[in-house]
Image (cartoon, rainbow, N blue to C red):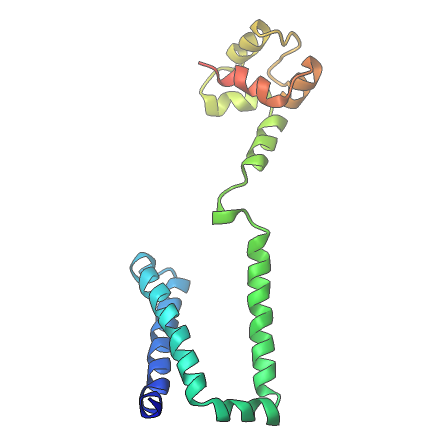
Length: 166
């Protein structure tokens, strides 16, 4: 077993690091992303195993790095801080990088009837008439959705429902 570790630990770590690094560079520059994504992910898993094998094989050398110098500690700390920064930033985003639907709803609530008419492919006057028919007597093309809702004592999505109803 020890001879196998000696023979394969470093070459396997080097080979997997090369594939993960190369595919990572391609993905960073958005080249062949779809084709290399799966390769990158699978070789990343294999690379973790290869690095662990390399560490086991070279454990005595690694202990020297920790005892004699600060290079290993500084490298691990820097890598950990960068990883935490990326993970922390991603935790503040919406999962999957999709737009936040609450932000979209807030934007719609702040829009006027005339602004809502554009994506609905309707005339503002037609939407105002629809709102009047639904009991929103003060509706005008420049009326904000939120103000109409507040004046009628209903939530803004109720006004949007009237505007988008078929």
